[in-house]
Amino acid sequence: MANTTLTSSIITKEALMVLENQLTLAKNVTRKYDDKFSNEGAKIGTTINLRKPPRYLGRTGQALSVEGSTETFVPLTLDTQAGVDISFSTADLTLNIDEFKERFLVPAMATVSNAIDVSIANLYKDVFRYVNAGASATSYGTSGYLNDGTHNTLANVQGQILTAGAILTETGVPTNQRAVVLDPVSQVSAITPLTSLFNPSGKISGMFEDASLAANTLGFDWAADANIAQFTPMTGGSVTALSSAPASGATTLAVTTTAGTVPRGTVLSMAGVYAINPQNRQTTGRLAQFVVTADTVVTTTGTLPIYPAYIPSGQFATCTGIPGGTAAITIHSGAVGANPTSQNLAYNKGAFALATADLILPQGVHFAAREQYQGISMRIVQQYDINSDMLPCRIDVLYGVKTIYPELAVRLGG
Image (cartoon, rainbow, N blue to C red; front, side):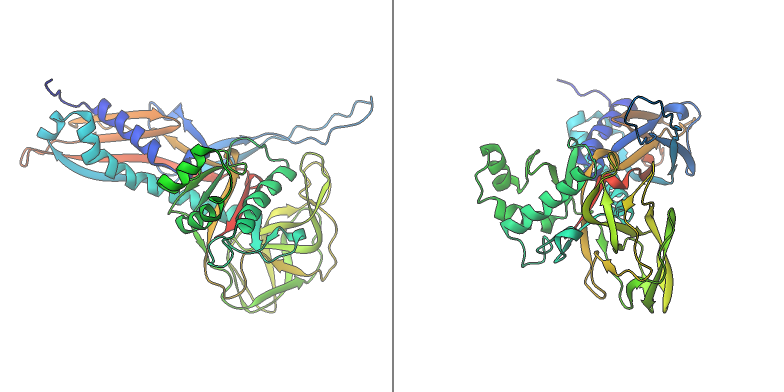
C-alpha cells in the first residue's frame, strides 16, 4: 500500500497521544484546559483561576443556622513553555505514521513529558504531611526510609505506604484516585519484599516482568519516575522551640534557633498541636505537621512562614490544641546535615493541577496545527527551508502547575 503524505493534524494528534502515554506524575493530577484562548491564543504569564469549594461547619437540631459561602480561588500562572525543535526532510513526510512516530515523535515527546513531570515533582515543597524515619506513632513515624539500604523490609514498605494511606483517610481524603509515585531506587526497595507475599498472578507477573506494581496495591496506583525531586535539609543550625505561642490564624511561627537557613519544604510540628479531620473537626491524636514556605535565614531567633495557617477552631480549622509559649518543635523532613532524600509522593488526583492553553497559530508558515487531548493543548509549527529541502519544526506546550490541595498529599522519604 502506498504511503501518503503526513499532514500537520495527523502529526500533532499522534504527538499528543505519545506525550500522554509518557507522562507519569502528570497522569494522576487534575488537568485543566482553558478553551477561552482557543481563538486569540495564550502567552507566558497568562493566569487562570481554579475554584475551591466552600467549607461548612453544619448544625445539629432544627433551628436554622445559615453559614456564609466563601469560595476561594487559586491562581495558576501559565509560566512555562516547554518544547523541542527538530528538523526532517520532505521525504520523511511520506513515511507511515508508525515509522514517523518511532523516529521523531517518541524521542521528542520524551523531552516534553519529562519537563512537565519535573515541574509537578517539585511541588512537593508545598506538601506539609511527611512520613518520616524513626519518629513516634504520634508523628507519622515508621522504621526507616524506603531506599536507605537498611529498612527495605516487608514491614517497613507496608508501614510507609499504609501509613500514608491512613494519613489521607483520617484527614478526610477520598479513597479513590490515589497514586503513589516513587523514584526508581525506592521502587526496587518497595517491590523486593512484596514479592514474597501471596498476590494475584497479574500483580506478581508485573513485578517480575517489568519491575512494576499494578493498580490498586495497598490502596494506591503505583508508578516509578526518575523525575522525583530531592530535598536537602538544613545544612547547619537548629530549630528547637517556639519563642512565643502563635495566635489563631497565624501563618508564621516565632522560633528559638541557632544560626542557619531553614529551607523551603521543611516539615515540622509543635508539641500540643494535633491534626484534625477537616470534615468533622475531630483530632486524629497525632501531631499536626506544617511546612516552611520560603527559605528563611535564622540566628538566635527567627520567624518561619508556614502552611497551613495555625487555626485551632472554626469553619476553616486546620488543627486543634494550643501550644505553650516555648513548645518544643520537631523537624520531620530530615536531620541537620543529613543527605538529600527523594520526595516520593502519595496523593489524591485533586492535590495538584496541570493547566494548558492554546498558543497562537502563526500565519505564513509551511503548516501549523494545534490539538487538545486529555486536558493538554499542543502546537506544532513547520517552515520549509528551500536551501536544504528540510522542514524545521517546533513543538510547544504552554503550561503551568499548581498545588491546589496540599491536604490531599503525603511525602514519603526515599
